[in-house]
Length: 130
Image (cartoon, rainbow, N blue to C red; front, side, top):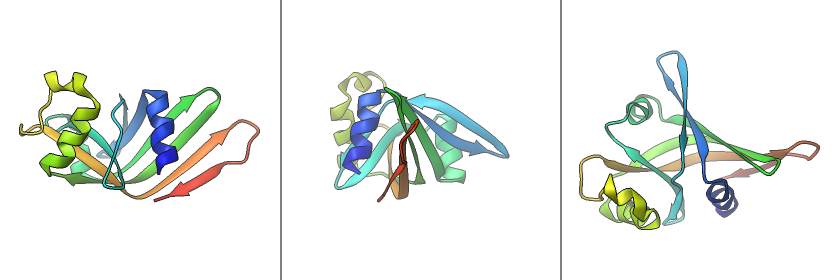
C-alpha cells in the first residue's frame, strides 16, 4: 500500500473512474493519504462523483509518470470520522479554503479489497493487493 501511495503522491494527479448509469465517468484528482493503515482519497459530497460512488462503490484509478503507470481498483468506503477528515486536510492545507472536517460536505473514503497493478512498456507488471 505504501508503494501505491508513494506513486500516486509523486504523480500529483491521478484519474478516478466511476460509473453513472451505464456510462463511465473519469476525472482528475490529487488527494491521497494513508491513515490508520488504509489508503484514502477525498472529495466533496455535493459532487456528482460522490453520488456515483454512493450508488456503486467500485472504482478504478489510473496514473502515469516517467514511463510507468498504475491501475488501482477496489471499493471505496466512506469514513465519517472527524479524525480521518482532519488527517487528510492537514496533509493538503490548501484545500482548507474549500473544505473543513466539520462541514457537511467534506468526505474521505478508503480503499477496500484493493488491487494495484504497476506497469511499464517492456516490463513485467507487478501486482499489489491490500
